[in-house]
Length: 558
Image (tube, rainbow, N blue to C red; front, side, top):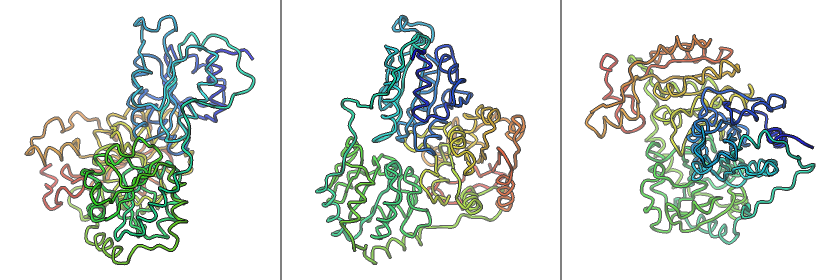
């Protein structure tokens, strides 16, 4: 069958089950945009290419399949870069389709030419520059296979515009994807898993560190069964939040520089740390060398490149965590963690768990707000965050009950992620769950134009704006380390956010004190459609344990 390169792209997208493409048109990718209009695939026009990549990421987190974004050549393609890198660092499947200048102009510094495959090489699983239109079906199929399998991640395909317009013969039958050098991991080595089982049986104080790899492996049921049968205490990274419900008796919280004290203390007291699906980055474990002492580290990961990269484990296990957990559960049948260790862990929980202050003091306590939001929604929402204090407050104070319910940029720390990711998640959820975007007034101003995407496509997202008139986390950093020399963190020239929401046709509300929180949340959640809730918080509200709440300035001192 004869068809243009662009028609080949769209037909192969359809064969891969694509329902939505997020993007922004330009001359080089217009052939694809044109043909999408005749297909079953919905193209959602964003307000920026970076937003398109983040929307594809949010969509992928909900559907567990690669999200798709598109941009034109040159600046359109480079605007995708931050979103692609964000997806790469959190192992989110994505396929990015970029237009390119005509084949004969490549390498001649043509108008809006950029080597986007070279630019994204360090943070894509793979990238393609199409040189022959007959390769399009094969390459698109391979891209989805690579993005979705193994350790997921973004794949980029760059299409010269002349090949998108030219006609080719579409193959009558698709070939099976068979990529030389790309082989999926088989079962984990049974002898290594047996060593893990023996180490657990011999440990007095074991702890599991659950990372995003457990979520990616879709191993929730296996993980929860393993923990229930063994009673081993669990802490998590940010990307592992929700693998156990936050109120599960064996879950003690997020560890790391912005984690909770009880989790960090428990982690440090363990005589055996079982790391599942975490790269052990610097924000998670500051002193990785300490884990190597005393043969206390077991590291289980699908990606062999992660094992030994940051610290050398006592027992390394390369394999899919779902498979490893199934093997482990059968090998340690009847094992239970000692009552003494559980009592010690529970004592830490009791000593270092504090209810957020809820008295009125001229501000809303964001931790209290998130407690109430969790209760009123029964945690049955997708909660998307920006990066900064709002992210940490959410991670440590919302009662997450399921994996993938927290959408956040854990590995890359990307401001400007939260609202577009929430939009992508809302498109994927299609009304099955409310989607809430939690933002600070710094990060929100990186996202503002995407409210236009919400308005145009009638995408319902509840927006919670923690307003403190500061870049809160950097402000706190300067307070602690730079003798309160506040530079470039006080936000002036902001819009009236309520009026801005109204300009887009959205309702809004405000909460100035804790006594107003309950009613404000009720109004937001009862509203049919997008809603902005402005929550005024103290500029000196601590992110975590770093500051004492008693030292916070009063409202008039802000």
